[in-house]
Image (cartoon, rainbow, N blue to C red; front, side, top):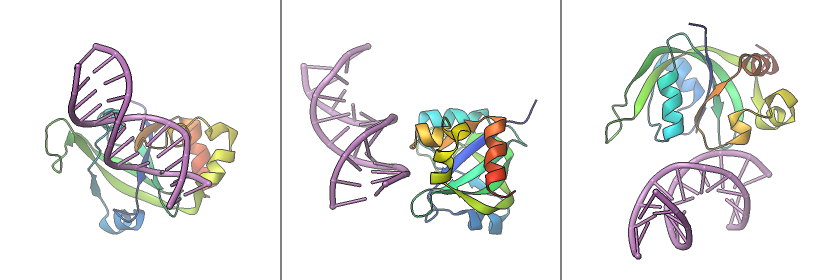
Length: 137
DNA sequence: GCCAACGTTGGC
DNA sequence: GCCAACGTTGGC
């Protein structure tokens, strides 16, 4: 199975990238959107993930990897919602702002731009690589 | 099962 | 604070 690439969004006042770095690993819970849930289900251990901060910051800030595939979200009321576990790989030396992403032709079709409310989305390999490079990684 | 009304998210 | 996008809810 080849590595898949993903993009997750987070409101940093809720749980921020530095929290993940500090914790070393976290359960990515609380996703309550069916499309995002389907993406969580498709994640495999070892998949690469980029973490984006919404709100004030609006930038891709870090790189993580999937360390546990989808399992029932313990924070959900009903059945059917899932969480994965993520571990940090590294902070981007230069966070990549939304404005930069929008200015890149290659990145214009990613879900962040096309569908800003989707909190978990797939990335193509070249998109992932470009974002990493823009971030100085 | 359709669709209008409403709520939420997130950028500006 | 406003607005666009989109998801959810509830009446029919």
